[in-house]
Image (cartoon, rainbow, N blue to C red; front, side, top):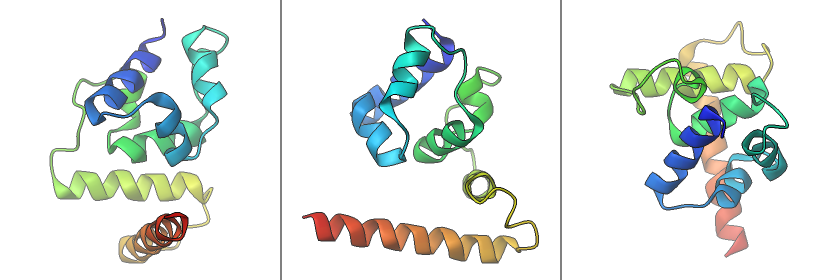
Length: 121
């Protein structure tokens, strides 16, 4: 089985969630992970890799198997991962933004997600 899939599966288990739930919450197609598991693809797209990285607050290098640590070691590392995810999500549209402005975007996204969850309840 694919090492990346194994790492994602381990992260899901450590969070007490299943892969389907993670995919839904992270906003990626479940079929992408099935393809990864079954060897139909060797790697996820950068976009989906970034979404999973942000979801679990781990580096993309960790998911790729290039480093061993699972979690950011400092609050600054965590923010860097989130800001990196914003860069991927907005495809370079944030090049001129400061980290503070990017944090504002993150805060707004978190607000909208919590608002959506309340509406679904």
